[in-house]
Image (cartoon, rainbow, N blue to C red; front, top):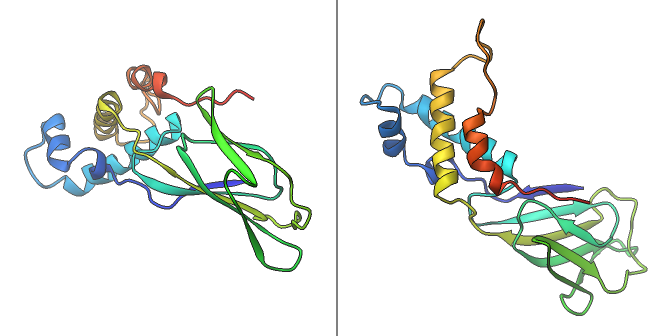
Amino acid sequence: MNFTYTAQPTGTDIVSLSDMKEFLRVDSTDEDTTITALLDAAVQSIQDYTGLHFKDTTWLYSMQYMRNVVIPYGATTIGGLTYYNTAGGTTSLTNNTDFYWGFENGALKLKIIEMPSNIIDDKMDAVNITGTVVNQINPPLTHAVKMLVAHYYENRRAAVVGATTSVMPFGIRSIINPYRLIHLK
């Protein structure tokens, strides 16, 4: 099973370089490249931690076997479902005829109405589901991005001798934890 987005946001899609420099109290342009790279890292880190996505885009979920599935990472719609068939081609299933989808307990779920008999199920990407996700950033998460960039900016080494540090400081975690997607199976 493999879940991928077609587009990832850059850090400056979320927080402009000028806003980030103001937050850091940096006046010169000497550190622009570094701050931009830290913005990219912070956005990706917070997306990974929360399971949210900060840009409108499409996604692809590939599976080896066709089955009913809970789509991860805050996906908002399912656009299509295709599978490799025994004739060597692909077959597309139709929404509301062959499958349906909806939300249950905040999670996007896909239900196959009748499993096809001509599916090849020994191929790693035998089943491909596509859909969309909407931008899920909000002001608290934007502030958490700024705080994480500031943390990265001030602590540029992987380890600081004689100090206790964490990859995701507790203050940032307390801001983003309420938005974290947790799938209970």
